[in-house]
Amino acid sequence: MNVVILDAGTLGSDISLTPITGAYDTVVYTSTTSAQIIERIKDFDVIIVNKLKLNEENLMYASPKLICVTATGYDNIDLNYCKKRGIAVCNIVGYSTSSVAQCTAAMVLSLSTHLPAYNQFVRDGSYQKSGLANCLSPAFYELAGKTWGIVGFGNIGKSVAKIAESFGCQIIVHKKTPISDYACVSIDTLCENADIITVHTPLTPHTYHLIGKNQIARMKSNCILVNVSRGNVCDETALTEAILENKIAGIGIDVYSKEPFDSAHPFQKILHKPNVCLTPHMAWGAFEARSRCIEEIAKNIFAFQQGESRNRVDL
Image 1 (spheres, rainbow, N blue to C red):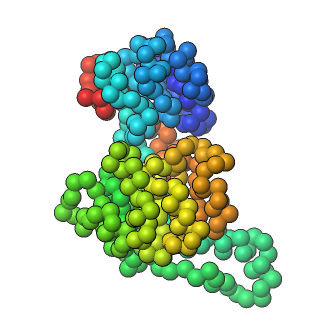
Image 2 (cartoon, rainbow, N blue to C red):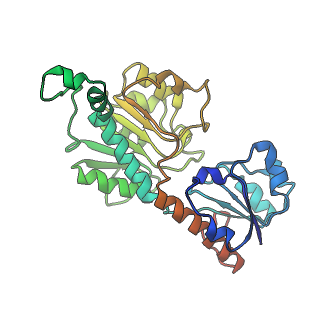
Image 3 (cartoon, rainbow, N blue to C red):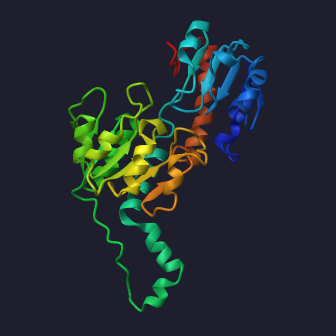
């Protein structure tokens, strides 16, 4: 089996690819443009990809046996076309749960406690010049007693729930299939009642703009929203308007409809806002998570060779 990795740079330069390159004849590209995909995939049995789109337009020129996505989400792969062609598709699950949950909590804490503002107050010398032993503006509030709404309740959502409970928060959940452990509510009810909303659901036709203008209009003025799932689960234009019009307290966003987003993206209007925390799709990528990612991909390829169905999403 020969293998091509199309966008290894998205996994970081500090991660060893040896679990894959040591076991298979592998060509590694740091990055690949859309125009280069056809030429680079045509002679390989296994395609490993993170963010690039693989569909009929490029796959029709190749005969891969297996596509491995270095992520849990696989909305960049035309699954219907792969099924038609008999191309196996694998994702990886559970590898980044701790990393994403940690970054989710970090965003919530930073936005709710205004840490950047307090840090800047000391950094720019204002604290030293103030003559006061402390500074308590902008005011911040305890998380204890607040309602934390979780949209999507897979491994990451469940991990975030445990963190939220440790802060003393009440948990409400919006998920496809209700459970008995937590109060499961509609998306509108969640938006009406939550002080904190964190988003952890895959992007599907059902979840596209799941949080849109109508849902944002229902949110409390003190609400903090964090999206670490997929950009298009939230209406980015509506979120921008909510921040500009002070309808909600703040947003933390790690994912975007276009990555990286360009000069025309609505978030360009709110980059300067102190209640906006935008990060470059990094929440999944703790060192340990990226190491597990490579190990899981290698296991997926080996299982496929053995005729086993491991992390197959095309079946």
